[in-house]
Length: 151
Image 1 (cartoon, one colour):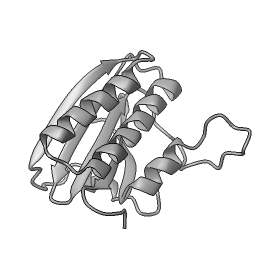
Image 2 (image 1 turned 180 degrees about the vertical axis):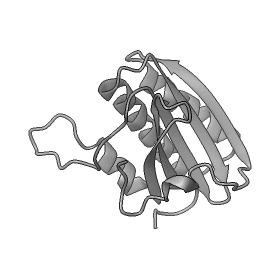
Image 3 (image 1 turned 90 degrees about the vertical axis):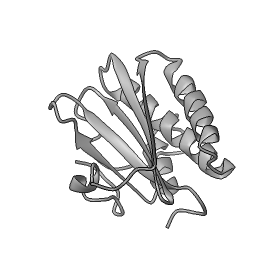
Image 4 (image 1 turned 180 degrees about the horizontal axis):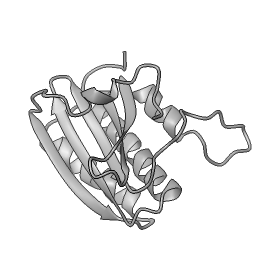
Protein backbone atom coordinates (compact mmCIF):
# COMPACT_ATOMS: atom_id res chain seq x y z
CA UNK A 1 0.00 0.00 0.00
CA UNK A 2 1.22 3.46 -0.83
CA UNK A 3 -0.04 6.51 0.93
CA UNK A 4 0.96 9.91 2.20
CA UNK A 5 2.01 10.52 5.74
CA UNK A 6 -1.38 12.12 6.30
CA UNK A 7 -3.50 9.39 4.66
CA UNK A 8 -6.42 7.88 6.51
CA UNK A 9 -5.91 4.29 7.69
CA UNK A 10 -6.97 1.79 5.05
CA UNK A 11 -9.87 0.49 7.13
CA UNK A 12 -11.42 3.97 7.30
CA UNK A 13 -11.98 4.12 3.52
CA UNK A 14 -15.47 2.64 3.72
CA UNK A 15 -16.23 3.73 7.25
CA UNK A 16 -19.79 4.08 8.46
CA UNK A 17 -19.67 7.84 7.93
CA UNK A 18 -22.89 9.31 6.63
CA UNK A 19 -22.27 10.56 3.11
CA UNK A 20 -24.70 13.35 2.31
CA UNK A 21 -24.14 13.07 -1.44
CA UNK A 22 -22.66 10.37 -3.64
CA UNK A 23 -22.33 9.60 -7.35
CA UNK A 24 -20.47 7.01 -9.42
CA UNK A 25 -19.65 6.69 -13.10
CA UNK A 26 -17.52 4.42 -15.31
CA UNK A 27 -15.37 5.45 -18.23
CA UNK A 28 -13.60 3.39 -20.91
CA UNK A 29 -9.80 3.18 -21.05
CA UNK A 30 -9.44 5.88 -23.69
CA UNK A 31 -7.38 9.05 -23.99
CA UNK A 32 -10.52 11.17 -23.71
CA UNK A 33 -11.58 9.68 -20.36
CA UNK A 34 -9.63 12.11 -18.15
CA UNK A 35 -11.35 15.06 -19.86
CA UNK A 36 -14.73 13.36 -19.49
CA UNK A 37 -14.04 12.71 -15.79
CA UNK A 38 -13.23 16.42 -15.33
CA UNK A 39 -16.43 17.42 -17.13
CA UNK A 40 -18.63 15.09 -15.08
CA UNK A 41 -16.95 16.14 -11.84
CA UNK A 42 -17.48 19.83 -12.58
CA UNK A 43 -21.15 19.27 -13.49
CA UNK A 44 -21.89 17.17 -10.40
CA UNK A 45 -20.17 19.50 -7.99
CA UNK A 46 -22.03 22.47 -9.48
CA UNK A 47 -25.27 20.59 -8.93
CA UNK A 48 -24.21 20.01 -5.32
CA UNK A 49 -23.33 23.72 -5.05
CA UNK A 50 -19.72 23.06 -4.09
CA UNK A 51 -17.47 26.15 -4.01
CA UNK A 52 -15.51 26.99 -7.15
CA UNK A 53 -12.10 26.23 -5.61
CA UNK A 54 -13.31 22.80 -4.45
CA UNK A 55 -14.61 22.06 -7.98
CA UNK A 56 -11.30 23.12 -9.52
CA UNK A 57 -9.25 21.02 -7.09
CA UNK A 58 -11.50 18.00 -7.58
CA UNK A 59 -11.11 18.29 -11.34
CA UNK A 60 -7.32 18.29 -11.02
CA UNK A 61 -7.33 15.31 -8.67
CA UNK A 62 -9.75 13.17 -10.67
CA UNK A 63 -7.82 13.94 -13.85
CA UNK A 64 -4.56 12.79 -12.25
CA UNK A 65 -6.09 9.64 -10.77
CA UNK A 66 -7.83 8.65 -14.02
CA UNK A 67 -4.68 9.33 -16.03
CA UNK A 68 -2.58 7.24 -13.63
CA UNK A 69 -5.09 4.37 -13.72
CA UNK A 70 -5.01 4.35 -17.52
CA UNK A 71 -1.26 4.89 -17.88
CA UNK A 72 0.02 2.49 -15.22
CA UNK A 73 -2.47 -0.37 -15.33
CA UNK A 74 -4.06 -2.49 -18.01
CA UNK A 75 -7.55 -1.37 -17.04
CA UNK A 76 -10.27 -1.71 -19.65
CA UNK A 77 -12.28 0.90 -17.79
CA UNK A 78 -12.10 3.05 -14.67
CA UNK A 79 -14.70 3.68 -12.02
CA UNK A 80 -15.01 7.15 -10.55
CA UNK A 81 -16.78 8.15 -7.37
CA UNK A 82 -17.50 11.46 -5.65
CA UNK A 83 -18.80 11.63 -2.06
CA UNK A 84 -19.48 14.47 0.34
CA UNK A 85 -19.30 14.09 4.11
CA UNK A 86 -19.58 17.34 6.01
CA UNK A 87 -16.64 19.49 4.95
CA UNK A 88 -14.89 16.74 2.95
CA UNK A 89 -15.17 15.65 -0.66
CA UNK A 90 -13.84 12.19 -1.40
CA UNK A 91 -12.62 11.63 -4.97
CA UNK A 92 -11.91 7.97 -5.79
CA UNK A 93 -10.83 6.17 -8.94
CA UNK A 94 -10.83 2.39 -9.29
CA UNK A 95 -8.91 0.43 -11.88
CA UNK A 96 -7.58 -3.01 -12.59
CA UNK A 97 -4.09 -3.87 -11.41
CA UNK A 98 -2.18 -3.42 -8.17
CA UNK A 99 -2.13 0.38 -7.97
CA UNK A 100 0.81 2.57 -7.00
CA UNK A 101 3.48 0.75 -5.01
CA UNK A 102 5.10 3.87 -3.62
CA UNK A 103 4.28 7.45 -2.79
CA UNK A 104 4.89 10.52 -4.91
CA UNK A 105 8.14 10.64 -6.83
CA UNK A 106 10.39 13.64 -7.25
CA UNK A 107 10.47 14.72 -10.87
CA UNK A 108 13.37 16.61 -12.39
CA UNK A 109 12.95 19.67 -14.59
CA UNK A 110 13.41 17.49 -17.67
CA UNK A 111 10.76 14.92 -16.69
CA UNK A 112 7.46 15.17 -18.56
CA UNK A 113 5.57 13.36 -15.80
CA UNK A 114 5.94 12.26 -12.21
CA UNK A 115 4.17 15.13 -10.47
CA UNK A 116 0.61 13.77 -10.37
CA UNK A 117 0.56 12.12 -6.96
CA UNK A 118 2.46 15.07 -5.49
CA UNK A 119 -0.37 17.29 -6.71
CA UNK A 120 -2.93 14.92 -5.13
CA UNK A 121 -1.04 14.97 -1.81
CA UNK A 122 -0.76 18.76 -1.85
CA UNK A 123 -4.47 19.32 -2.48
CA UNK A 124 -5.82 16.64 -0.14
CA UNK A 125 -6.24 16.19 3.59
CA UNK A 126 -5.52 12.50 3.12
CA UNK A 127 -5.19 9.93 0.40
CA UNK A 128 -4.53 6.25 0.04
CA UNK A 129 -4.81 3.07 -1.96
CA UNK A 130 -6.91 0.06 -1.13
CA UNK A 131 -7.54 -3.19 -2.99
CA UNK A 132 -10.97 -3.77 -4.45
CA UNK A 133 -13.15 -6.21 -2.54
CA UNK A 134 -13.08 -8.69 -5.43
CA UNK A 135 -9.27 -8.77 -5.23
CA UNK A 136 -8.75 -7.66 -8.82
CA UNK A 137 -7.84 -4.03 -8.89
CA UNK A 138 -7.49 -1.09 -6.57
CA UNK A 139 -9.00 2.23 -5.61
CA UNK A 140 -6.95 5.38 -5.14
CA UNK A 141 -8.81 8.00 -3.12
CA UNK A 142 -8.23 11.52 -1.87
CA UNK A 143 -10.18 13.58 0.66
CA UNK A 144 -10.38 17.23 -0.36
CA UNK A 145 -11.64 20.10 1.75
CA UNK A 146 -14.88 21.60 0.48
CA UNK A 147 -13.98 24.97 2.07
CA UNK A 148 -10.54 26.41 2.69
CA UNK A 149 -7.09 24.96 2.27
CA UNK A 150 -5.89 21.41 3.06
CA UNK A 151 -4.84 20.86 6.68
